Image (tube, rainbow, N blue to C red):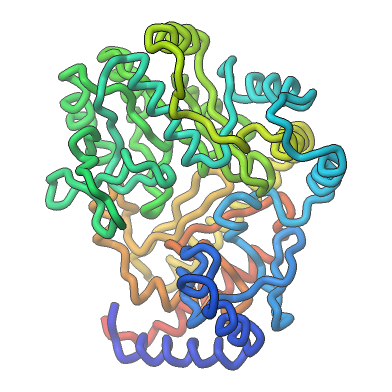
Amino acid sequence: MTTNLLTRLLADERQRFVDAHPKSAAMAKAASAHWHGGVPMHWMGDWASPFPIFAASAHQAQITDLDGLTYDDFCLGDTPSMFGHGLDLVARALSDQALKGTGFMLPTRDAVVVGQLLSERFGLPFWQTANTATDANRAAIRWARAVTGRDQILVFDGCYHGAVDDTFVSLASGRPGMKPGLVGQVHDVSALAKVIDFNDLAALEAALAPGDVACVLAEPVMTNCGMIAPQPGYLEALRRLTRHYGTLLLIDETHTISTGPGGATRAYGLEPDIFTLGKAIAGGVPAAVWGVTAELSQRMIAAAKAIGPGYSGIGTTLSGNALSLAAMRVMLEDVMTSQSYDRMLAGAARLVAGLDRVIAKHGLAWSAVQIGARVELVFASPAPTNARQMRAALDHDLLEALHLYLINHGVLIAPFHNMMLVSPVTTNAQIDRLIDAINAFALALESSPK
């Protein structure tokens, strides 16, 4: 949508942001002297604001910036803070462990407890740690290839599973190839990775039928190109077909852990061979885990014996450090509880109901898609069922305008599309303010030419 009204709206909102954030502006200028792109990690520059907001503090589901402005936070660090900021239980666990030491290259008592908790919660008996979901997915892919003796993996168009080279493939005009924009990519990863549309059963079976796919790497609900839900029966067919063709099923729950205490894996009975989870598992402390079935564990042992001794190419020094295990223990025992999820799911339902009212009131061709505590406002109706449809619905001008409008009205949502997370400490008043802000934005667009 490119209209004179939208152009004026964006210009007004940019100026409003600049006027309200003199301290963040000064910090942005200072940071640009020494940080490439002006920020410690380039994604921090992906917000719709003219320059980054510099955070001062966060508590529960609110962030305060250096200019003293407070925001209702529905981004929650893009999931690491899904259960709220500044959690006392996590802070105490980290403080206690830090005083005892943070990393020893040795297991701790917490390691035993965390392993038991992971097994009970997600249903897979054997686990390993990593620093990020990227690391967990990379390790899982290597093991899948090792135990199956197959080179290929299969992913879905529009996926994101961290900075794993093997997964940077997409479909363009129906043809597979590498994702555009890759920096320094020197070999064609599409040679060893198949990519198909999500929800396309015929394409799934055709890709698996040659018997050369080591694993399918999938989110139960796609969340990184706008939220795309599985069609009825699709996940069941995915499990059935992978078993039939001897392919391992690798489920990445880094985002869909919002579904419930056991993620979508337990909620939908997915029965993966491998399960990966990062971000929220340690309350924002860099950590991830990956688990496997008993059968796959035995196959891994046999594969390692056949390969012989030497550097496996899997693992990093900080993986499983004492600090991250202490954080994981308190998250699993005391924070990621059924009671927390009950509050999150109730809040998400309230948000979806409010968004549906706004959509109906203004006659918008938009949709609200939900997976547990995660909600996406999609600029299409009905909601897309694959990434190709979602890309066609992504209106970048409208996206930027909505995000900046919300920022100026004291609300943060994830900067990459219209993803919103509800935490157990998000209040009804915060949810209602988000709904009201989106309603006000829709009103501002009322006179836009059709």
